[in-house]
Image (cartoon, rainbow, N blue to C red):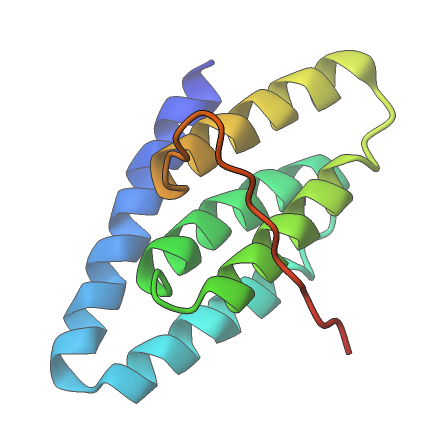
Length: 122
């Protein structure tokens, strides 16, 4: 459980760096965040890679709040990748961390409301 608290500190660091870059140039900040998201995908081991990917994706989700299609595509991407963990305990903790991160980013939907969204994957 110490890992998730350290990843929270890492998420705060990335978010601070993003906001610092955003003050100077919005486009450069978004490119930096996208590059970081892509660079994390090349880490060697799968489980640490997924933890880092979820952490960077949470910052990306906070940054792209108004772009719903990109947000949903990122969430589906991370969820599908986390399904690939075969070890039950590691997968359990990974999916728990994913649900904690998504809970803070995704908006609540009132009861009785059905949300339908069409995604175009190319």
